[in-house]
Length: 619
Image (cartoon, rainbow, N blue to C red; front, side):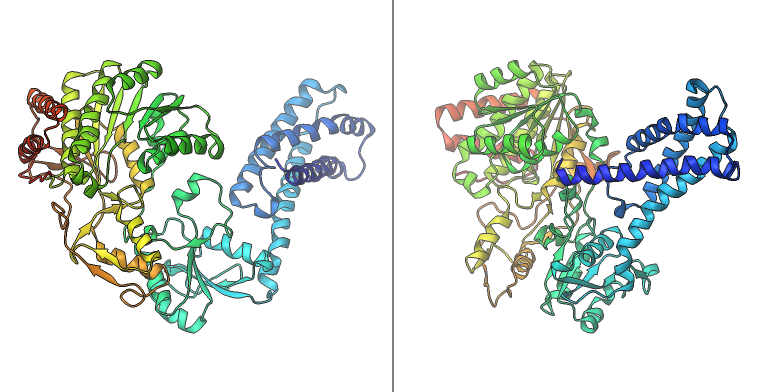
């Protein structure tokens, strides 16, 4: 802890000690009308030091010195009442048991002491807050850049308060916009709520702010998009508070952490937020293995799993740099040191046997996979070896070594697959179902979802590079659409799904409405401060072989079934013949070993056809 913070806490303790002593003396003074009998005066002076020390200790126990008094709120008042009540009870018991004078403490003194202590301690805190905030209401600070704040709740008030207290920042809030109609016309911190986001075009014309800040961490994408669109038409820059997920990742300094609006913020879908401590409680105290731990999905899995305090996280990856980076992040940035970083390739049976035998994981999240569709189309043997055969290897070892739960991270491209990558992930799902039939002691589940923004294989990083280079941004078809969600959202649902299954299920994440790729491109260009088709051209090319215009989340023989979890459904389908699955895998492995890609292509085409009349082209 910094020296200034320690000094500030010490000052708060000294003030509270003086207030507590004053309250105790005042209780005697008021009880005896300024004529304290000598015997009670002796009682007061004898007990006073113990009262002060005891009350300060209780206040500290209730967290009274964890925050500056200028930030005291109604929740803190409740804790103060509880703390003062407890000190009064302790005062009665302590003087009865340990009082060396043998004189009972009058009940009226205890009651008066309770009221005075509550009045002085709580009153001082709220007085400090009032004095600090008085300039916000009674004094108009010098104008810097004029800021309009979207959101008049706690987030918006926090932003406004920090700006008004720190004029050196050069920003001056001029008002709020909030979609709660009850707040329209009201004043928060002396600033008027000017209307709702539906009124934003009019408000922007009247107020002419220099910048707009979205101060609603849980704001849906539709609201953010509406604000960005209105501001973009008038050339007004927009910044936003971090999202709920970003706040959960670490402490947030409100004003310093304001950032530009990103494409993830305007997907047009409500963000998914779960209580990770509750839904991930089954991971606490367990040894959790994550394969592909250095990747985009695997890395976020490790970050979120670390928050529920497992006994150990075993990071498995064959990419040295990625593995090094995620281990260092968990250790240094997130202060979670119960980590084992293991270099290993999931395709290599002997190495994976060593890892399972050494660490004996309780739960495995299998996120290791090749994801780049076109690259896998050009390297079909490696795609199937890494995505399908490796999944079979790891899932089989999980059963042999008594893993309690095994979670496969799958993809919507496994549905009616028309590319090598999709077919390889379809085979991976079959491997999981087959492993469940052989190992009843392990609960296997697959989790299927669409595209995640900024992940390996996502179109978003490609578009960013193309925009930075001045274009063109390439879209393969004007009608092409995809499902999107953010990486933290997907990972929360993966963790939740891991505890839903009873064995062999395929869980599908509800992805919201699909997004047109060409609209995504236009939004990203606009967010970069450029004009689509003017500053950055958009070129429509042709779909790659096997590329579908629209992705599906269910095969034709699958029916979506509800689950107890929000945003997660189960794909119900006829059970596959485990022996037939094993025969297909044995033949696939034989063809890979013989280096026969053509025969491998024909076999996988036939197998994929069984899963939903798919067409698979392997070259």
